[in-house]
Picture 1: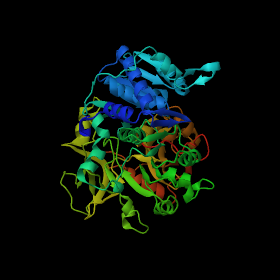
Picture 2 (picture 1 turned 180 degrees about the vertical axis):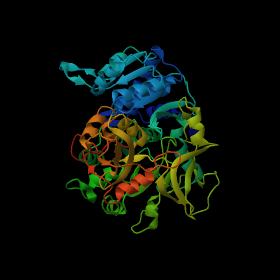
Picture 3 (picture 1 turned 90 degrees about the vertical axis):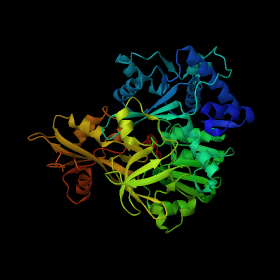
Picture 4 (picture 1 turned 45 degrees about the vertical axis):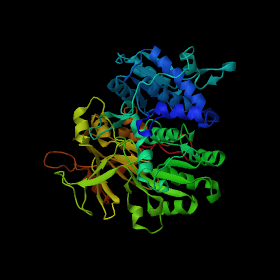
Length: 552
């Protein structure tokens, strides 16, 4: 096989299926799928996709939780030359409809759990290009529900032989939707090369892999973040490309995560800080609980030094912080394990550029700033996106001469460590889940009593940040925080609904009329910003010890 820089996801899977066929590729809810089984099953689905008229560049959507069927669908699309579009299962039918239309999805795979959402979308009749909807689940022996039975029935009769290569490393394979500051979801298109560049650059540079994020063939990797975001799907695909065993959680639960780490002898994982806190708070955990772990990567939200110190004491393994984005595709910046020392000033840093990547900080005119000067963070990485789907202007604004403009303000120190100060684009991150203020503000503004609204994130001890809404009511109108909460339900996903509502007389704006969210944050932090009602809530997960979904 040729050099990894020229590989695709299909190359990687075929290699592992040939050289270690009986090695477990995916473990999910007691079901174990070997690399040989994953290869054959994805071949069969790829042939069925081709037979259904799905060709190179076609968009195939997936609405469902993470499981082995999700990953074989991703790999089948890669083999057929199609582009997988994972859909956030937390979204409302209207939000799902927008994504499917924007992507131009030709086929939709859907879990039984989310069939009602799909039915509501289809009832709208707006998806003219959709060829078929494939139910993943079905009925097995004895009339019992059978995960994957619908998928197997759909591709029954299709061969499981290898397909001729239909994609190269620079061809699109994945389209992830992540909203921008306008509140309109944009499809970030990533290529096969995204999932090979960091491991290869680390090897080519001679850098110590222990000082970064590395995936090994002997690893047992816990995939605990949702697969509709780059953190979940990217973590799996990097692990798969390395030949690791991937232990997949359809829904994060701290209790279940601890159980899986002990039972499967997990060696590596990526989590949001809130998930670390929850695992440490589980009854009976100790250093012995995590004895199999060699490395924990964390990121997607701020982390307190107190929590970091506790992690250093209990987990007893290497800790590495990640700074990235969907547009970056892979890990862009890493705070290495050697920097994780109690009392070190570097614990406040995001890290240094990973091998093959570069960082610069620029001012408003695009000039590179000296160490210590705060400006906009830019990253150059070979893993970067191909662009935003059908949005050339947005692509040109974000990806400038090979540099990704990250939307964050920060500075570099003399040693090249990046320190973040604020998010330029005002994105709110709740337990690793991105929430975009403009989207929530738009829905709030549709309430007949609301004259003006600003949505910001404020520090929260449990989730890192919580969503707060500052609301100005129309003269003579009344609306309680609870009424505002109930108005939002069903319009946006529950995790986007504000935790608290602050009724103000006016909102701070600049001369051009733009809301000054930083000033709003400062006002809400100060004593007595106005009546507050915590009528909303960071959505309580289905069971104690669960966290909201991870990064988008």
